[in-house]
Length: 93
Image (cartoon, rainbow, N blue to C red; front, side):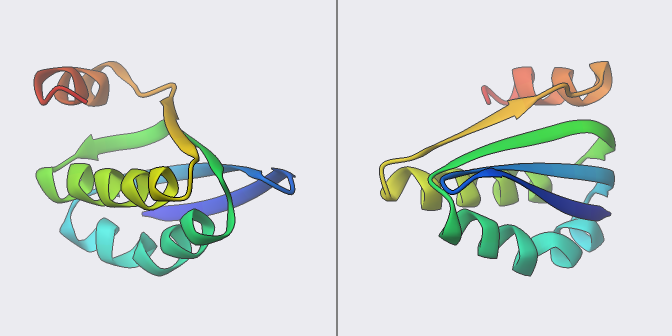
């Protein structure tokens, strides 16, 4: 799993995820994702490059969304591929 951060403005960043968001992928991105969620009020998470989403990946997304929300911000998920979108829909995300 790879994570890149594109700073759009002082309050907003786009997180681009590429790879498998499974246990290994979640561990790989945890620190940089936490840093972005701590620094920005608004996060856009581009999941167009995510090929697989496991339950631990959903937990990672939720924990970062809660961090942003606790500071009055918002996190949105954009462009998930069909298989990832189906998992997100089935789990109520």
